[in-house]
Length: 376
Image (cartoon, rainbow, N blue to C red; front, side, top):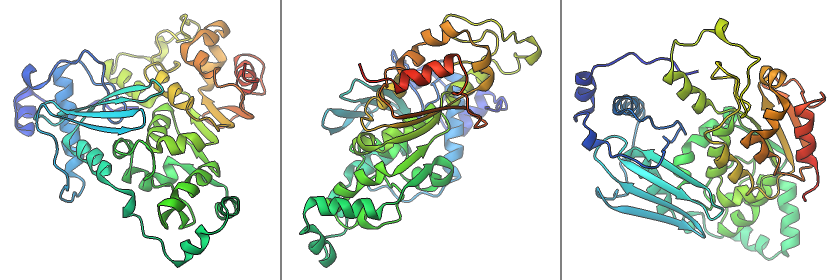
């Protein structure tokens, strides 16, 4: 849960940022935008300025090399395209979060972001990469390339053992090419998927053939739908088309943090009545014991691109499952969207404490049956 920030005066903020907190520095957006953390951008100019203080504080704590790319001038647009997937970077202002990224995928997914100059540089740097940066074809790869494709595929299946991937275990590699860097490579060709083999790094052809196998042999585990969205964007088209095993929590930490910041200190646990549920399945008075809303559609649109997905593990808050009205649960927009992912071979539903929930009658059993039912 987010911690309440110490209040700063406008003078303190302007001194630290080096510019005035004026509406002219913060263009109005008719589109609801998000930071790269997927946290909703607040409407208040003061709150946005405080976010910028956080951004420059975080930046100063990291070491940076010199950028090899030139960012667009204010008012200019840089476009990155891969097939029908398009990322448009617009430089709108000189402030810390002076760039907007409008992401549109051919599948219909749209994700509007508000970014810092540093983040824009990451995107443009990755976009400059060329596949011939990979090592050239050596004697071993020349011999290997002469084998029939079916034999090469057998080698790939033998080389890549089954592997577990999580943000906790692989966060070092993930942050090297996280959500932001990945926007410069919609194909996912450069995502640093950790493997115990050097085959994907031999040359372009071997990487193109081996990466799909590596994804099929990897089980991915994420904390919430925010992490899932970041991963599915980062691994690109190659990863999404080949991922077979996913585990994640049906909650949004960025949404919870935003809710907490909107009403810090106003909620008392003793005032919560867990018996009152609205038609969307949200428990009245407790802003954290809810089904997620903000990023649900983005999450579902990305999941629908995972055509090989067969194994799914979902985590829910046990307390929410116990008290929610079954009809409200089934009518929830996100849950209805989840049930469109039919035809999965193995579905597990558990609490965040890893307690199995799908052996029980009720909404959990119903959801499991829907996900495992044949595609209509």
